[in-house]
Image 1 (spheres, helix red, strand yellow):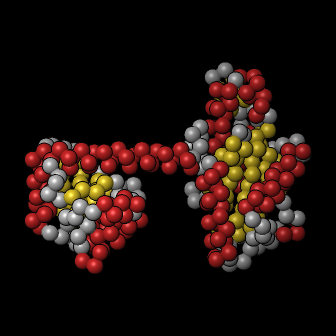
Image 2 (tube, one colour; image 1 turned 135 degrees about the vertical axis):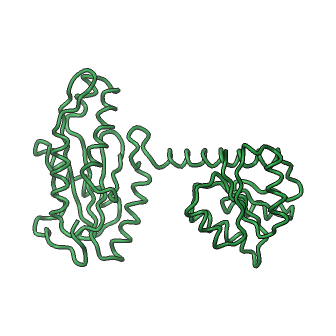
Length: 310
């Protein structure tokens, strides 16, 4: 049974909509009606609904405002707008604002309304799937390069505003090519998935772990107080990666080289930060791997002001 939130301050219209759905199939829909905007937002935030039916006719055009508030409060819930006006420009406006459909009251037979609700739910799922594929790595489930850059950009803005440091770590696996050459790419994929899990286990949930492609990963650590905290994280990751990977055909032993830079001590744009972390990573790799290097000189290992320890 699908749980539907009906937001309509007109009792007559609300009863009609309820009766239309009930007459279609009483076992398909459970409808809850609210007639107050504040209560509607409360239900959107706290309740669990499969879809929202939103009446557009509220005073001062607040129906459209509420649509935006619903999208902000719960962007995953599909919204079907109900209106007493057949107006193509308004319909396009609400669709552009995030609604999944626009229906005119009095023209909604039970079959049409039920179909609209189900299609809206499926469209929303498809939209979320496409968004996921655009932002996350399909193999490991980690943030991908595109979303990583967006998160780093926002982290840099917060860093300046809150006067807190950011640690950017670039990780490259050592001897990973041997895994693919010896056991095949399926084994390599298994190692990459396990690597993602190991890295995540070494950082906080609020930190961002991303796969940049191939065997290259990045970590964004916000709220940084001491560069030494980053050194401890790097040591945990290296210790974790030293442990053998158990594959179906044997055990793979690899390692990791890590380059680190700290913003805003390293006060540059995203591309320069990545180049600096990459150069530091190659210095670590030249040391034989299973090592980390900072981009900034050692004398900068000082407390970053106005921050709390990790």
